[in-house]
Length: 380
Ligand code: NAD
Ligand code: MG
Image 1 (tube, rainbow, N blue to C red):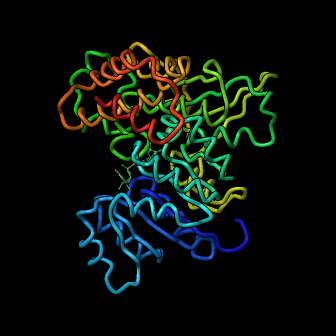
Image 2: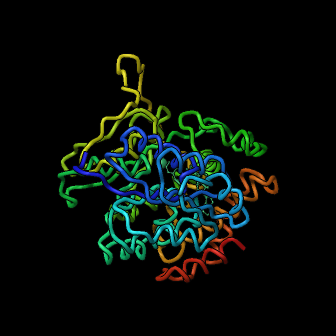
């Protein structure tokens, strides 16, 4: 671990990634990190418990109507309390060494862009930042000297497999996908699934939305776009392979035929710990893989017929412009409608395709306002 105590803010502390981050922070102890701010939304009891546990200076709920509840839960602790969107942005603007960006969806974009402005390390779990804002987001990192470290397990794996290598020597990157709970299902079988079934991921315990995105493979679609931006790749350089065991977290093919992979347990504390300890490695109490107990590692080609999200991502990669932001905005709206029981599982990709057809001419966004406007149109 880096010498001396560093400061950290966790945006989205009460979510799946946030809880794993707090677990890693608790393990590393206060000598490694001092916690500046924790943010959440509806789970006030958890946010208050977390803030007490790590001795945060500030706790913020994005939900303005929950201010009183959070204030009561933290009374007498000396922990500062705030609520609402402006308070969230203010929390993100406080200078810290590391910001964990773990809010779900485009809601995380403005706070993460704010955090970038004070430089430091941005441990990025919120893939929507790169999907919606791509070039603009990276330019902001560059302008403010922020270091972007991918937390998404596939991108973290690729980041690790690229260390010490020349970028020009990279032929392609290979994103692995578990295939989700419907990997072997027909479209007919998928037509009637509910949000509850779709959220039951075979390998990973994650937030509700990303779990359903994994079932539809929209998660992999977002990750293809995320990878293109993070690693400066062409559409042709982004491969996807289905790997049901989720042991190989992704790979890099080099021009001499070598392939470097990163392997590990399906536990997000590994990539989170990597980003927090970077450029060192922390000692973590994660499961050690027992190769003798692993009977096999399977790989199969993804099926774009049954999972059209992959075809739509490919289209966005090739088309450029605003198509990735449109894909994400329409996907977020369709996912909300699916969770609410208003549309079927297969309707999600159909809605996204309609949005991409209608908004295909929009040019690449160059500011937060432009991105939010494209997002608004795509949701409609
Ligand atoms: P989650 O739904 O479990 O948690 C989301 C967090 O964001 C919570 O703290 C919630 O309070 C907060 N939040 C939600 N809506 C908000 C809003 N409008 N304003 C402010 N805060 C809000 O999500 P998660 O599974 O932890 O995923 C977080 C991000 O990390 C997503 O972008 C996801 O794609 C990415 N990611 C997650 C995993 C995983 O294993 N869960 C893996 C890789 C990447
Ligand atoms: Mg991932």
